[in-house]
Image (cartoon, rainbow, N blue to C red; front, side, top):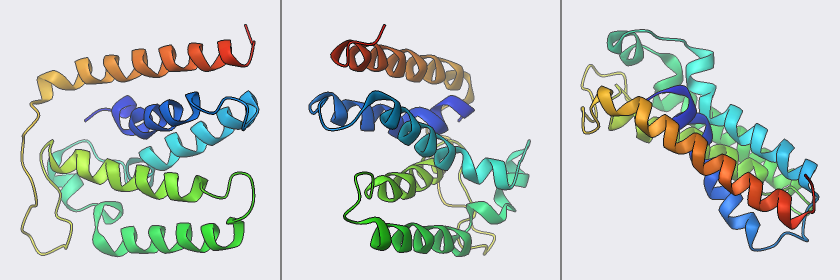
Length: 154
């Protein structure tokens, strides 16, 4: 999948959750949270950029070991920030990272356990990736407009 699908997938879900409680957080704090989730969603590709499918199979950031390290860091952050206003943000970031791996599994697969056995395949054809990216951008923009309207921000 392409960059917007990886970065905005869970941002759209977070926005949909936050639409129900607009008074809970200020808009610009929400925006910072969305950016953190988007970065976590793209993090596997930022840490180990790959242009070919073979490069993705050999990527350390798409393996179980690095995923466990990242999830452990998110768990530690959650434990320390549990009672803070944005304590759940680390859980959202962990979910974004895992969603990225799941998206890669259905778009060519990943060698998650570094055994040479690829998990997943092309369930979503590469020709649909730009369309999915466009949909993700449109969904996030529309949800953002709704949230901005709830906060009375132009």
